[in-house]
Amino acid sequence: MMAVMTGASDRQGAAAPSPGEPLAPVELLDRLGIQAEVDPEPLAHNGWLTPGIWKVHTPDGAAVLKYLSARRPRGQTAWEAHWTSGDHDPGRWNYWAREALVYRDRLFEAFAGSGLGAPEPLAVEVADTDAVLLLAWQVGRPAEDWEAADYAPTARALGRAQGPYLVNRALPELGWLSRGFLRDYSSEKPVEWWVLEDDDAWAHPLARAAFPPDLRDRLRFMHDNRERLYRINEALPRTLCHLDFWTKNLIAAPGGETVVLDWAFFGLGALGEDIGNLIPDAVFDLFLPARFLPVLETAVFDAYEAGLRESGWDGDIRLARLGMWSSAVKYDWLGPATVIGAQTSDHLRYGGVESVDPVHKLSERAAGLLHLADWAEKALELAEGVGL
Image (cartoon, rainbow, N blue to C red):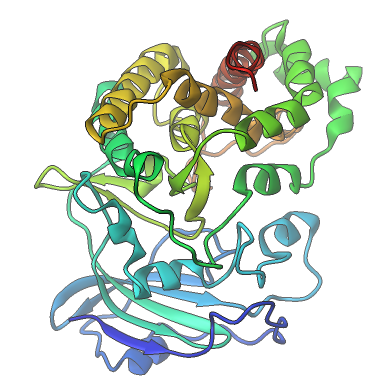
């Protein structure tokens, strides 16, 4: 049985506490009343949102220890501030305590019976300014090892999970579910938009080697239409969305279920929004070659549609396609970042450890961005067709 210890973290508009020293894993385990058998093993993670994640071994087996904190350091860069500013507002995309509350209240069970699950919470402590999670270690095949066709069963399960909220299942009325994720997450990023107009940046040798001739105009097109794309997405039917549904957060469990990790953004989003994240991220982070994008898109969308129909939803499937296509605006910022990246010396695979060939990395990014620019154009056309 899960141990639950709760403080007052559900409160609205809590003031940001002063920064403090990060707690050691042994201290966190002591708070949960659990003894580790061997030294904790640090796991790669987004340090802006999560101060620490470790693999630990307890008397009951392997587990993941995760520490969440409302304490933020002063003197942040603009990029760090993007991840942390406003994170004490429970409805914001980056609310610091959300994942702990998802596990404490077992809200991941909102997708029960669909084929999507989550690691079993073994212990959860939620206090005023921090939280500690102990989650069962998940055995299975990580999506990093999947081929394009392997994404289809997960997309079908996602359709089964989200469809009921479009039919007759009420959305949870919880103030800490994220709202407005697509617009807030992407529009608040610090972006050097000037680079889209800077001839010198595009003339860099690496940019010339990696970027197709039409990339610059296509990025401008998507940026010029970003507000329209936000509004299209926001006008679509709402469902429960994971909102970080991508390769690194998916594991195919031995029993056939897909286990989904990292529920920190969980909340309300558009029909089709999660697959609009899943498809491009598989390419942007080099898990699949960009040449597979059309195959991946077809496999994922067709499976998602099948899952929606299995859930009982009989609505206009063009709305799901529009949710996927309009989600291209989430990556508007990535165009300038990619151009800036052509002028740097470090080119690393996701995780920041393994070096990759810079021309290959930037070429793959460019191909993915062109695919999304096509999505944006098709979204604008389709929106007219459905009256949005």
